[in-house]
Structures are given as structure tokens and as C-alpha cells.
Image (cartoon, helix red, strand yellow):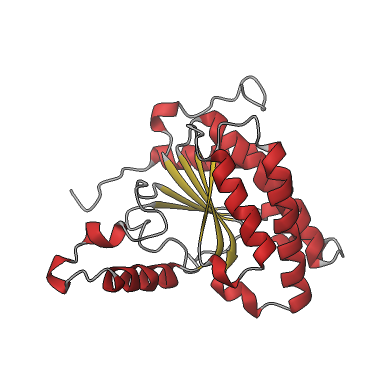
Length: 241
């Protein structure tokens, strides 16, 4: 099963995180180091994403959420935004066939109303075509922000007429994009940055964080296993002694 040298020992499945969030960071810097346009980094990063997603499924991860485009990313140069959106189109078209034989259920979290209509249609088709899959849930965060998600949840509760005294943590969780999914166990951020960047701020209240000094386009299954090994070493007390 391993893609690595036979002598490498993988973390046993029972010690793996069930729910993993990855901030796919460093595409632009990877391209700049090579004298390439930033778009080249996004192209390579998209290929890495597909490889890592399939590997997580094979390793038995239950939920994988990847940060593809944040609500703040609209501030980037328009040419870069257009390139990312075209990559998203290509990914959605490819995924309908590329993931066809994978037991992966694809979902999209975030405010999709600001996206082009053809992208929204492709997202809906990808979700519908994988809805009956029973393997890993793959959440792709597009136009996503943790604060915006909580605001959206509050608005949903208000529109449903839920009274303040009936609002609980469980009620709010039921109105998040990730409703029905377990809390995040591990947040992984490559690229050498040490911040959460408004990502899954409700869901990862007790998540373990692993930061790695490797740019996303260079990220490999071996790097992922290193993160799993670090996670397995942690003593998770969830606020207890």
C-alpha cells in the first residue's frame, strides 16, 4: 500500500485523525522561486491536491477539508483570480471522470452565489454524482471564511424563527456548512506560515495543529505521513487534565 520505502512504518489506522483540514498554501511562492508566473504554482498545487485527496481516502481518513479559495482571496490580482477559477472549472470537469472510480463523496463549502453560474452548475453536478459514495467525505472550501460561515449560520437560525433561548452550540453546528460532520482533529498547514487564516474556526476548537516548512506544490504523501506521526504523538485532553 505504501508509496515509500518498505522500511518506513506508517501510522496505524487507529491512531490516525478522522477529520483533517489542510490549508493548501505556498503556490505563488513556489512559482516565484522558479521564475514562473503564480498561475504555474496553482496548476501544480491542483495536481498535488488530487494526489493527496486520493491518498487520504486510501489511508482511511473519514473527512478531508481543503482550503481552495477564501473570502479574502478576492483581493488578489484579477488575472490570478481568473486563473484560479479556470483551474476550478478544469478540476470540476476532470473530477467527474477522475474520481469516478474513487469512493469519495465530494462537497463544497462556502458561499457559492458569488461564483460564475457555470462553476455553480459543475459543483452541483459533482456533488450529485458522488452523493451515494460511502468513502471519505471531501469538502472543498470555495469562497469560504470561518467568520462568514458563523454569520451565515446565525442568519439561517433567525430566518427559521429560532428563539434566542433555544440557541445552543448544537443548534449552531446544525446550521454550519459542515453540519453532521465530526469536529476537525488535525489542521495541517504547509508553507512555513503559522496562522489559521479564518479557516474552520468553529470546527477546530480542539484540533491539533501541524505546521510544515514545505510549499504546497512540493507536498508529498511522505510529508502527510510525517504530519500523521506528529498527530499520533499528541496527548489530546479536550480541556481535561
